[in-house]
Image (cartoon, rainbow, N blue to C red; front, side, top):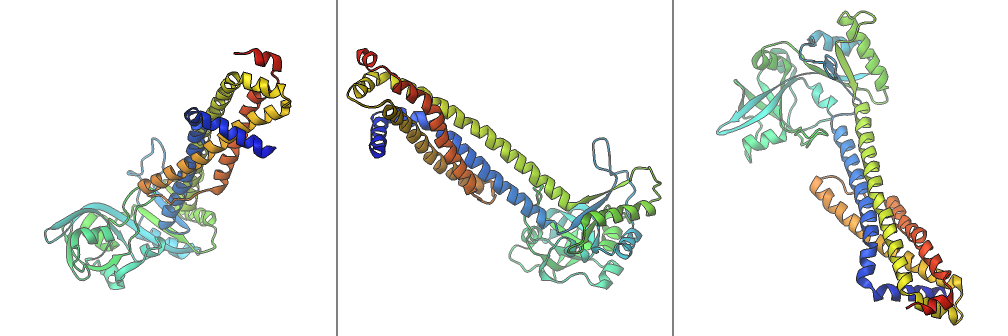
Amino acid sequence: MFYETVKLAIQAIARNAMRSFLTVLGIVIGVGAVIAMVTIGNGTTAKVAADMAKLGSNLLFVRPGQFGPGRSSAEARSFTASDITAMIEQIPSARAVTPIAQQGTVAIFGNENRSTTVIGTDNSYLVTQDWELAGGRNFLDGELRSGRAACIVGQTVRSALFGNVAALGQRIRVGKVSCEVIGVLEEKGQSAFGSDRDDVILMPLRTFQRRISGTPEIRSIYVSAMTGADTANVQRNIEALLRERRNIRSGQEDDFSVRDMKQIAETQVQTTNVLTALLGAVAGVSLLVGGIGIMNIMLVSVTERTREIGIRLAIGAQARQVLMQFLVEAVVLSLFGGILGIATGLGLAWLAAGVLRVPYLVDWMIVTVAFGFSACVGIAFGYFPARRAASLDPIDALRRE
């Protein structure tokens, strides 16, 4: 019996194929939009998390001044080499403490030049950033102490200046300084903020201060906590140490800021999750609109087929059989729309993932929920027209033209 009911429903839908397709278009758009938005959102979240991980593990940023509206770090007192030494000696949970001083400049090799960023630092930079060398070596202790003009270049700088020529051992001009390339960094790609992390040149801090910036200032410090260490506790220790060294009294606001990379990453992921849920909810409204469209068309169908319904009732069909027929028609329409919507959503998400360069991560739970919801929409919005058809009086129905 149920098989015959489904067969009749499919035949009725096939008789008006174009109208049936337009009827389920709202379901197609709704299901497709939900799946596409959630899939793209999941990929974006994964990319943000991966980009954040590239910045280093258990990482804390220490900078002069405070972040926020109306606040400027440019006028805040910078850090000194003694601050770095104090952190290394007095914060036992710190795996590495890295001084950072940087400036935009132009690097030149032969006829090639590149506007890039030069960073004055030491060998701990590779530790805090979880970065490896693709070739060459780190700075020697003598180079760090004497301020010798040696440098390590990122892949973007290497490619722009040297092309297919070996970079190691070559001399490049960084600003007004001629320095020897002693190492090449592995490729890191873009950061979570869209900047090219490989567009960089590393130089011994003392060399940078003496010959590039002309000042002993250290504008930021990276602190990498040991594996298993509580970064919140490390952050409190850094704040207490710097308050003491910078003579900040109790009740006074810090003239520096310490930010935990883990907190920044969690905030970014939470933000993308909220946006994904919001976009999915907005797209879900299309499912309701599609359901209303199905109800509208089914009501029209009941009106058009009043005489047919009357004949079926007159020859012995039960009201529940008529109700089931129209209800099955609505559900079949919804499921058909759900299948098309799944295909459309997955296809759009795949294309968008390629364009946006984010992972293609399908959440099959969402696919299942969207498909199930489309079936529920068919039942919910198809019940009223089916009930109306089943409650028709056979005599009145037969009289209807």
